[in-house]
Length: 136
Image 1: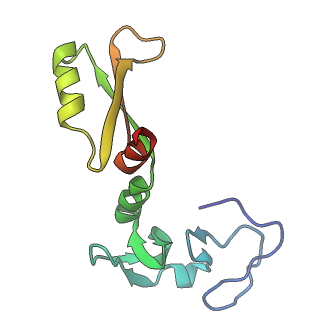
Image 2: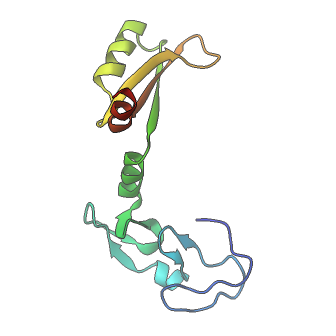
Image 3: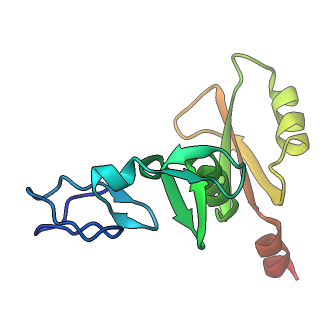
């Protein structure tokens, strides 16, 4: 959901006007919808589950459930930082795991102490295509 519009919004599905400002929720990629249209079932184009329009999002023309939407958004991130706690595993194990368990499509750039920390390590990854472009 996003901030309410300044005036009265219209439902993008049926064209109904809201009675009070801010009563029509925003569906990402769709727009503001009335509650009756928001309760309609839609099918996620990634996993096939049926969800309510209010709990879905549109990304690049595809209707997705929130779980698949977050997975797709993650693919567009250029940098990813993961944290590891030295209190729960030794530093050598953290270094090995940071390299071995890199997210798919990412290259490990650095493993360093977390800012203002004595026990947290951070592994920084960059999209492999970007890394290769910078290094070529």
